[in-house]
Length: 410
Image (cartoon, rainbow, N blue to C red; front, side, top):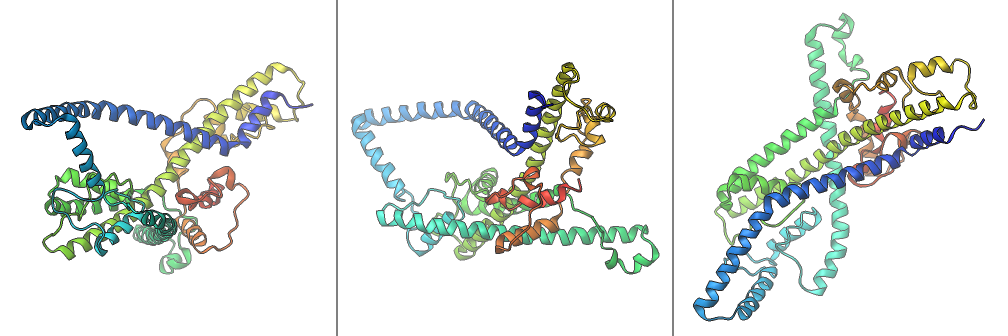
């Protein structure tokens, strides 16, 4: 007998899990954008209206005091705005297009920060920027990937050494292994992705706090503004409302500009790596949400199929399996274990299960990063598309297959 349309729909839901993950993430991002827009509109809109009112009053008073029409005054202000776009300010700033200023500009281009303080105005400069940025951004992303590979390797070695030392001191090892621990070497041990995320987060916070302590006295910013600048810069958002190293002269100028460059480099690398690790956690949460939705959908399909009589052939012994798992054995849904069967009853996933699902082998991550960076052929397990963003590019593409390789053990 042909399976019912409801059961076919349940199977298609399981087979199209990649599409479901993509749609679910798109919906969540749209909701996230809507919430963010509502918050910023409520917080910033009143200040914008007050600023407009003050500015209109200032223009009117200036026009009446100096007997200048508002039309001529607005024309003058438009010329001044064009001068600002060209890098001309009322305050004395350093030249924008000398070699030092141009080097600062290309650094913001290839790192994708893009402050917007300096932009090319000639046709030749704009055309050159297109080709220069295409190659430079690609090379810088590769550099960030290689940096992430080495960070993961270093963290794996350090965390494994700490765990080995803890096991040695606990006295739980057999006498033979205690003297030759290298042969034991923690088989099957996987550092948690949450530990990596915590270490990278603390590193980014430390770098931001140290950089802010430097920017506050040198640039004359408030400390909170300096922290805000660090996040906007290190995350490559680059609004351009705060830009460092723009004054004409500084005390210990060469030392400050070198420290500014190093802080930006380390901050961008740390935040980039942190974003990659957070994306793993987001992906696992999406997988869990899709699994719950798929299980609930399959459970409803099976309840509906119970009213269809015995038109669908069921193998012997399937009734007890259905009672234990809450689904038909034919339904290739994700609920294929006793644990998943217990979750069909409506029990929410425990924090222990969620954290256990996020155990990631940093050694496998390092291997995949190395292979993707050097172009070596790699073998992807057959279930990689089921378990991760297989075949992707960019930040998420770097971490495609290691979760798939570890998912079978989960």
